[in-house]
Image 1: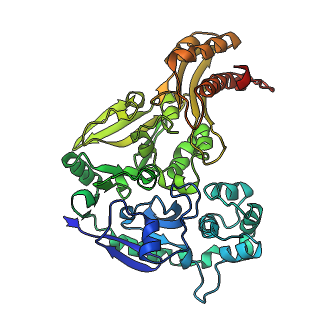
Image 2 (image 1 turned 30 degrees about the vertical axis):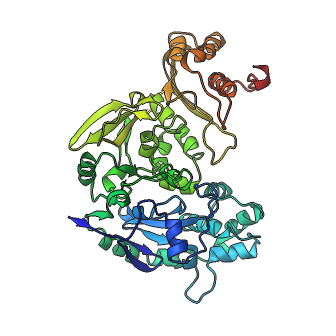
Image 3 (image 1 turned 90 degrees about the vertical axis):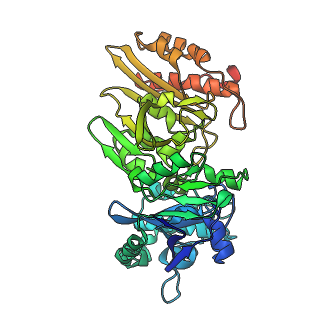
Length: 487
């Protein structure tokens, strides 16, 4: 049973499209096909936030609205969703929305190009937190860049939300039950198939349907959050068809927790992972706050970050350090694989034709263990990793009894530092062991130089992360690390 059109709601209008290219972005559809030009194209890579819109989806028995980057969100991924653009915010009498009015009154715009994106990010925040803290405001704006206004007027506007209206009176709140019913009516459980050959896109109706399709057509490009694949199209002009969009497969969004582990479906976003991994493992809360901006965290998935095999992906090293395992599926069969063994070489993973990542099971840190994750970037927020180190160390009576250490950005794949681990295990947790462990890094890694960091800087940073871990655990008040020019 198939359907030959995608169906979604744009602002208040039901939309059914049977002519959709696999690589057509939501931004192009809005601007070129619908003349909704409040949504801007700035970077075309999900970095500047000028294209921010809200996408509502059914989740957990309710309707959730999240800011996304329309420039890298594919139109084919929107089946069963509600898209809200800046044009839809005005009140019924034509006056400005409270968030828009606050931006005007606090002079939150100069040239105005980035302003609609800021408004939509603040609107999403306003619905979640009508009286946000400064920290919440800054986090909500991580994914929005402004060249001319400066952020202080925008932050002041966000602080004043409560003076401009109540969330309960907003249409997205007052009409939420009605909209949830409309979206539920769109979800018929059928597979969507549009186009032929190189112009083909598929939206599976269920997990079993996805497995059946990939077993028959293993060459298809799997797209979850598109925070990576989107750039294949907008920056590298790659042909990605045929495409299978898996974002609507509910079974892949499941999170199962018990006393010792958390199992995340491959479609669990960074935002959703924050509520599980972040709640139970503090180091993950800090890491997730530094992955992209809200738009990227709402779209990007843990499973996708693993499956694409990037050597600088943020998720794999801290998962490897915890001893995570993958569940891979092909057809009706599944197999369990330690995550550390999934990465074979650059661009090569242990994934057979037609096989896909179904879930990742994450053991919780052992009680009393030292678990730390350190991310090194050129700028603190919304930047890609140069070096990332993850450490799970157990110390008993001053002696290291176990160690799992993994790095990203130091090799062709995310990789364990086995030589470093071998130095530490069985040794007293002291300066001598740390010095020897730092030297052992050269046995594990031979990093390269690229636009993010030189090989020398990467090695020095990786060494200093070991020292940082030790100094933090022994309560050092002053930390003196080796300087780059001294290396």
